Amino acid sequence: MQDRDHTLALRWKGIGAAFLTGQAVSILGSGLVQFAIIWFVTLRANSGTALMIITLTSFIPQLVVAPFAGVWADRYDRRWLIILSDSAIALVTLATALLFFFGFDHIWLIYIAAAIRSLGGGIQSPAIKALIPQITPQKELVRINGIYSSIDNVILLLSPVLGGALITLFPVWIVFMADVVTAAIAVAIMFWMPLPDQRTGRVRTALGTEPRLKAGTAWGFPSQEDLDMEARAEESLDEDTGELPHEPVWQQFKRGFTYVSTQKVIKNLMVVYALFMVLLSPIATLFPLYIRRHFGAEAWRISAAQTAVFTGMAAGGLGVSLKGRFRSKLKTIRMSGFLVAAGTLGLAFFGVFESPLFGLFIALAFGLGTIVPFYTTAVTTFFQEQVERKYHGRVFSLLYMIGSAAIPLGAVIFGPLADAFPISWLLFFTSGMQILILILSWRAVPDDFTEN
Image (cartoon, rainbow, N blue to C red; front, side, top):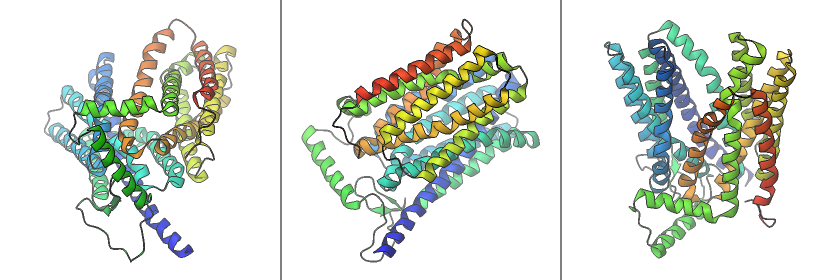
């Protein structure tokens, strides 16, 4: 029995490792292109308006497509959504690279390419988050989400370094081609990787072929019997409610929204998450300005502080993956949320006392970064476990919309306030509100609630 369990573990771990490898390669290519796009617009236009346009074209499309993407992730094969969106992004990037190679390097081409890339990313993200619990045993969700978070943060850290090196050595179209290559690798991995069908649980490649297994063995994915039972329950539900497979997308999304609104714990924690993320936005958007005002205008200071945060986030993601599981996702969300608020409060004191201890500021920024993956991973895993499988795509599209909109919304609110008040005051306010929200979150969960 022990040998069989070990074999099953190797099987799902091999599939999970292949999936994470493909995503790491894809994210790296996307990070390089995003850096190249910002670099090109900055040097070519030398305009704040141009940077605003590229920011909007990189953000608005993914927010608009997210409701559709959530429905598609629940209705269609998530593997193919990831493959097709990644392929579309690669084709647009390839076309842009070829146009630049032949001298058609107009800035409006970058705007169009950024918008289409944003659409593809908005389709991919809910599908990826919904696919992870589809291929991972529930007890290992924290570990896999932690690894995914660590990969994302390491690439955030490396992209400017690698992108800057590539742009220094090669023309910008070469960087675009690098993304085409990384996307091709990621698509190839997804294409040939055996995955369980989200409705039937049958393990197949993209071509529909089933890998050969010895009699009496399984792949170690979430129980195939459970998936079959869920599929039958879903078919019965559809028949009773009249929900058809080709029902309009907005109606399907409304069903997902209705599901969230009727699940008290899920609804309340999603509201808490949205408010917490908006209040986190001053640290995300005003950090360079805060350093500039209180420590000096030297570029290395801003670079060092941002590197500390991203390094801390990468280390935190690694720590989550090594830990492997949380005894309680709710307690982890609250505790890590309190620590994030406390770290923000600590950073605020540097603005009050005009402290010259920049090294201590960097250490605190690193510590704050290490806590963030514990919070985000606990939130993601909680929803993966608590939300019914057939609603995963739609619920994660809602989370994606909240995460995508919270920081820009917070920037709109707190950006102008930073010109009227000291940033340290804003940090005191937001950290205090975060603590208050976390305290009130205890009332958002009924006493008889138990985690899966």
